[in-house]
Image: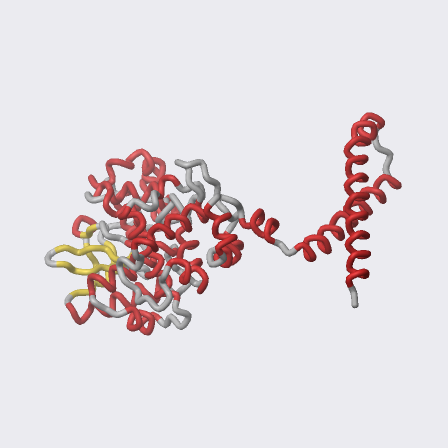
Length: 371
């Protein structure tokens, strides 16, 4: 089946729009958002030379008399830009050079385009299954927030239980459940004012660029995080946090993302430290340090048992000194550098002597106290 471009509507509620869905309402705003956020240059280049490939139909849902593109909004946007559709007027300058190429190659066919239409209640589940398999669990996946927004929409608008969605798209690792938990949690914190995305120091990618949403649902995969937030055994719901849980959620968001408004830095360097951060939330001593804005590494260093600190620290210092001594045997250093480092080296020597003395005293004391 083929349909004229003029009859096709861009999807205002596209899951890939993430948290920006309320800001884009008209067709020209949707198209501009697609171009600015996701880019279409690759499609403009291909379409201007080859035209539209019949083997890649747009997937459309029929709502009343409207044909809304559920899959292929970037392709539709590129076609509208090349053909000079009025909906593309905001980005006309970005299409100009590609339109020249399109003319040069004899205006390869772009209108009408092939489509697959899903219509009626019987087809609704088929479309949901198609999009879920294609973008949640397959290779052409959306980013994590777009996935979560899609799952929330399916649950809220279509009444499908999370378990049914998981079966429908072949999710065997509870990814769907964690995505939805993360989506509801962050939405509640934003709506209540306990988290302001614009204040996040850590940026995100894809649908949400203010903060890395993937960190939220990753953290919810740790039992320590659920225990801290009071979510153990709590069913997935639009407002999962109690009043105390919201306060703790605000602490967690600041610890993960930092807070530009208060000047607080993130407690983690990257996502690989999230598990370590989670473990710090359930110990009163380390939690206090998290609340004070200390980093994971600072907290772990401050709370490391003295036996481990001595054993590991002495070995690290010895290795560093051995390396520097060996390098000096091989390389002549500048006189000025050597003179400048005598003082610091002397201080290191004094500290080393002090540490040795304390270790000897501890060893003697241990022997005297032995039975």
